[in-house]
Length: 372
Image (cartoon, rainbow, N blue to C red; front, side, top):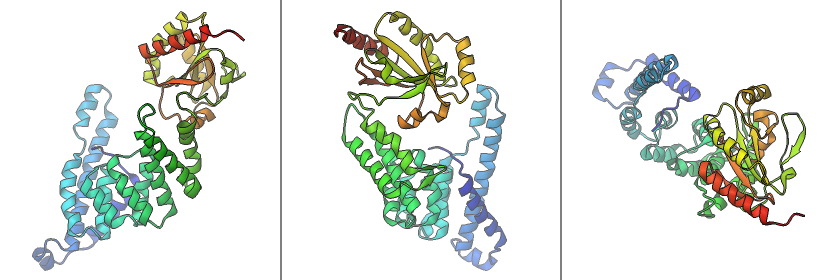
């Protein structure tokens, strides 16, 4: 379970609270039938208000925390999603088909991040075609739990909105991509590839922020089709620190460690001492270490390199706007590719001793080949 505030959905839920306050239930009816719609709406509004109060205190404490101990203490104020699930689901089940039930389910799934199978099923069974689910589906583009896949399939089947269908199709494709393990199975790769192809063909013009789904699919399809072990890596054009044009193919004949990183990345910085040892050990070998910086400001990179010894090749090209980051579908830092002397991808994501073993083996291969 996780807590994730959605400003848009919370705003909608706030309106529910205000409506409930404006409508004064008739005392006799409210007393006689506890589960009348007005009472149900009011009870939900009170739950939302309680959550807002709890989350507000938690958020304020976390923002004020300066030390790890203060953060741990503040984290104790985080609202308990299970408490709200137990309070809201019985209200939903009174009439799971009405609009208020949809609001309640979105409160659980979107605002609280409760991946409750009952709530997911109810939302899919009764509200997959409701326009209100669009913001929730849009939020799943960045990642989703497997429990939501059936709901997304129902959105694709029932929702009249092209945007909702496209976003749901994209989210399912990224879910299949997350299941893909290059070393174990090709089925998830094919499922993900077909999903992204479907998005490009039928929903490519749907926008997410300033980008279209077609553009967002490009990097995933490149990774699935071209950035696989055994294939020659796509050539990359970039610039070195002096502003000189460089290409990945310039290093044919050498083993290449391609390290996509950033100075603000803690794990990236943690690898520097080992990388330094590797580069020093192989200084006279057919080997090159290339670090591609995602820092937005080139001066940040240059300032970092003045203080931290990193005596190898560095590229910088527009920082986070570097076309390579999109073309190669870079989703985390560091991202490591190791290429053999012919430019083929032989290893991905290896670090430490695993990197040493991979590089040493490829360097030995390169040294055995006759020079052209």
